[in-house]
Image 1 (cartoon, each protein chain N blue to C red):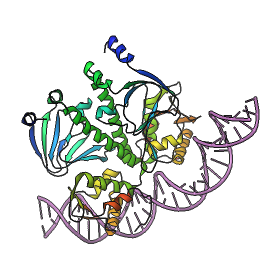
Image 2: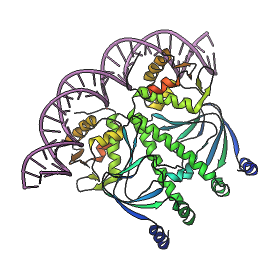
Image 3: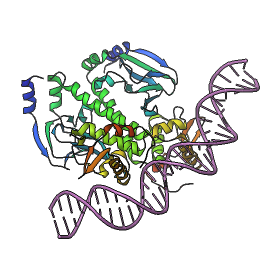
Image 4: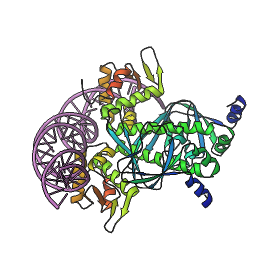
Length: 218
Length: 218
DNA sequence: CGTGCCTTTGAGAAATATCAAAGCCTGTGG
DNA sequence: CCACAGGCTTTGATATTTCTCAAAGGCACG
């Protein structure tokens, strides 16, 4: 896209600040806009019929989201909450067709984002179906680290607050089990966790926990 | 689409018979074609790094599939096997763009299929994350019934052979547990299962099992 | 008409949830 | 600036679910 084209697209966007914990949109709402996350991190969540919250995925800055109309949906299938204070660009859905036809590559870029999300969902299904809780928790922490990590001199820190409860909602387990696992990993110097922040010290060992079925406990 | 257009599209397709158990395409292969399932039922499967098979979904007749290039993928992300003898229409991917531009609504129909699949994956993630094994198995049988059922005078029969192992691969459990559950449900006249076929007698009670956490056993 | 899956069922083991209680942060409001 | 309330965390004890191991019988297909 040329600089001119880009300016044109940006001129049509509205900018919005979303405070931590507030929704950008909620499940079931009319899918009237699509978005770009300029800064911050989003948590995408759904409620099942029992009312249990399940975290579908997290979105890192720089990504388009709320593209559901591109798949022919009228409403958002999940809610998006700000995991930290966020800055989002907002376009009305009516501009979607204009952008798609005017800018070569716009639609295909958007569909690539969709593909990424679909792939990630597929991976989660595999994990949820085949892994034990310990492995799922390790996978979840690793995914947060990869997608939302900031490098520090001692390891990688996840860029937003992550409670035991959040991890249990990502893995379909309980905060108690997660707490026990994290405590153990902290004792083993695989990670550090304080002030609701998680700091991965040894990604390789965490990666191993993703595979091993049962081994050196303690 | 007009009759003429339809004829044109069909003229460009190749017809193929796929015997039970054989693949239409396999995970990782070049996504060179897209397909329409004219008759039969497909099982879409993936292998995780450990080599465990996981059944992602089943495809009923009448649906487009192998649309991964529409999301910008070069390879198929999963394998599709014939659950019974299948008849498929095959088009080379190169025709995708022609069809999309020539036939208003072709692309949007295809994306609706993608959306359906994404929704189904989302539901499975919710189920896998929050439900107990009994509930997951009930959900799996119910989904097979809804998507692949044939009405009979006593209930609904699933249109292809379903072993305990297959259900365990759909739910991430073991064939032993599935066997115990199906035996119980058979005793309770919720379903019948013989010759590797499952016949649901009482969908309502099965639906209830989807929600209840623990109750009248035996 | 046998061989190889598929199924059933029991017994015991293991993983994880549930229940319970106490201490700790953190952010709030006085 | 301090005290407090509510959510977060840790940890133990116990309960429950589900898996694993084992063995036997059945059925289907070649």
